[in-house]
Amino acid sequence: MDKQHPLSDLVIVYHRQPYEEHVENGQVVYREHASPNGIVPTLKSFFGSVEHGAWVAWKQVEGRSTDRKGKGDGKEPFERVVNITDSYGSYSVSRLALTAQQVRSFYHVTSKEALWPILHSFPERYNYDAVDWPTFREVNRLFAEAAVAQAAPGAVIWIHDYNLWLTPRYVRELRPDVKIAFFHHTPFPSSSIFSILPWRDEILGSLLDCDLVGFHIPRYAAGFAAAARNLKGTAILKEAKAPASLSHHGLALSQASYPVQLGHEGRVVHVDACPVGTNVSHIRSLIDSDLTRERETRILAELKKGEPDERKLIVSVGRTDYTKGTRDMLLAYERLLQRQPALVGRVQLLVTSVAAAAGMGVYRNVQREIEQIAGRINARHSTLAYRPLWLSTTAIPFEELVAYYRCADVCWITPLRDGLNLVAKEYVAARARDGAALGAQGDAGNLGGVLVLSEFTGAAVELDGALLANPYSHHQMDVAIDRALEMPTPEQQERMARMLRSVERYDTVQWARHTLEAFKALQASPEDEAPQPVSEIPA
Image (cartoon, rainbow, N blue to C red; front, side):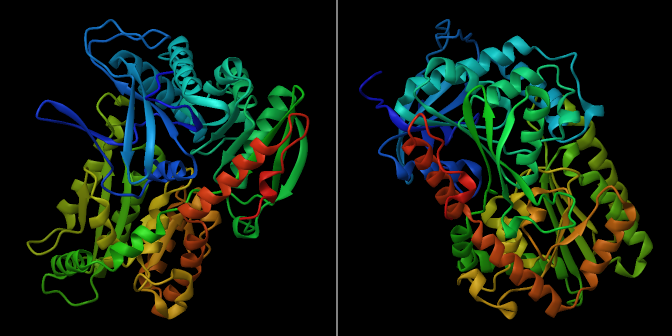
């Protein structure tokens, strides 16, 4: 390897690049993301624990073909590995130069049209015919080759999400000395749903080549273990009780215990469940900023427009995807205004449904239907001084979004399926009265507000205090939003206080600490001994 790119003890493999790339005066400039909130900044924070980190991602390069060694046809200059220095430290970024056709096949078609619907238990939306599995394999191998080229002896290579399912197998073949960790950001379905995939044996075999496979919540970990046992004959070596904060009984995603050690072909595979958190300290700083207060004043003035204080704001933040349940939430809002005509003029809903990237044809009809329902609601109930629904199809900057969270009486997040949902946690964190320690403020130390949350989101098992709703039931959706709008302030504050404590406990810092302890345990274990179960590592 080039001396300019030192080997790393931690290689993070994720499809997105860890910076914003701009061209200024003909020169490529790499800028840190404007907001430190989100999964990319959270992953970058791990580089502070190593002398030099590495990141592997793809970069779409037009007019360039890429072979398995990462060499192109020379039509466009391309620097494969770049060194980055920012507030997270110094690290190398290895970019795979993928053509538009490779990106479309690997990501837009195979990942989104075949794998995504199965993971979220929507088999009716599964599309096998368009899949080019050889290209999916090829891209996954390119990721593996780039990762092992960056890895020091005995390093941890940490791979993220389902579109890189096959990467562990190739890493194991190329570098048996490294430790392989994988984190699943989506749900993991029942083995009967997972079995729909014709590549199920290959996918599970690759995941079982990992030393550690992590999930947000115990239910997903148990789903993976069940699929491995039923389809690959994998042994369950050890089970553990789910943490008390993640094992509330009676919920759709409740799971009392789950396997933490699997035995496969003479190896031990460790399974972990720890939800990703939000950046609580960043949200605290925004809460205390003058700019946030100015935005709150502007939003409230726009909301009221001379109307009495009882006009309430509901926010729902997401992106265009049939799994997000935006259509069903809008229909529930339409029923609300029809069922309670006295609320017309007294409630407003802000919805963000960020359109998918170009080429994601699977979501075009979803976006069209969302816009049609929104148009129908506004046409029926708008006046010169009142519009019941604001629909934004572009992302609202996070700093401004926090101000909307501060002003919103209700946050309505009801996906049909969702691996976790950080928006729910962001709303809760923003409801602290000020930037002081959230959990120490007591019931009256928050702004109240109500979180209406689908019981099919991973966050539902940890946010004890949310109003849970089944988005498949019109009745439950109607009851939940009615109750949210009528809830007394003391009950709002008591529920919010419980959720604030949970959000603070499972923040980005805790997730990083937990994961780093797991990596240390893996690396410290002799080859003939199993490392300490992740579930038993102190938080």
